[in-house]
Length: 430
Image (cartoon, rainbow, N blue to C red):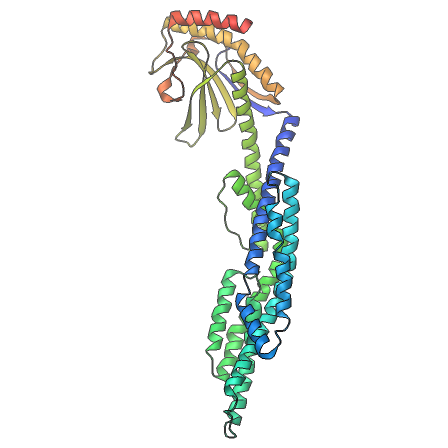
């Protein structure tokens, strides 16, 4: 009753629950770690945003004694960002509660910082215009003539209009949530605006270029505001899963379409990993059981057929000159076959066939014990595909050159094998 045996195993509900809890714990830790990294990166970006604005603020304070409250807001921002590094450094990376608490702390700090950025962007844009106006006034002072008054007034009107447009563009550019593409477009628009010296052209530029651009920016920010919290949560989970399970992560923009795509990808990854995890657990437990029963892995191989199907073989010692070949197929089936061992492709002779049939009979008891021990580890039979009796037609010689051998295997020799069989039977009775 112990020829080749092919079975599909599954987990008991309790063992499946245990594995699911273990995976969920690892995922929570990975997601929290990724969230901390992303939130802290954003905070660092915010902290380095206003270096030029600080210089403008300092220049205004020295010239007119007023920077619109910029310096006070910057101190407030620094007070939010500076405590975060020590918090992160004290986080226990092996403790999910510690990681999630830190993630929450950094997220709250980021939310406060982003609100301040909006105010700082508005003030810095106004400060830049104020400084330009102040510098221009100082340069022009003492050069006015009655003849030039009309022209100066006209230039002043255009300058004020440019300043109004520039403030709008600068404020929008200062929003950290804008896409990189829109930010670059704003920078280019500001540069082109500075080169305009004709009032009619300025009006045309404002209506044709500036207004549509600002409208697109506002549309982007409205969608971002509506979905960014859910997007950030999903994207952090997606990146964490890709890192944890060795998938290649793709870039996604913050939008509603990305949210749906991320949900699909996260489910796909989890389903795939859950199935792989169960098969890996079954495989590991089988290795443990075989080792507990005195078997030793002496070789293995990975095979991919022309149709793309993949399977893995592990070769275990049985007796002198014999081995058990365990095949793990891509669809979860596990096959066990006993055979003689040699370093060439050949068929067994009559004496070897008789010895192998006797060994098949003895392996029957081992196979029952293997399944009994697997059950103790939460693994049960899902489908018995074949359980064939010992027969000469199943006698085979396993060519060890087809495997990556970790130990030297003795070639099947009939006389030795008979002694080894008797010895093994005695050991198993003990």
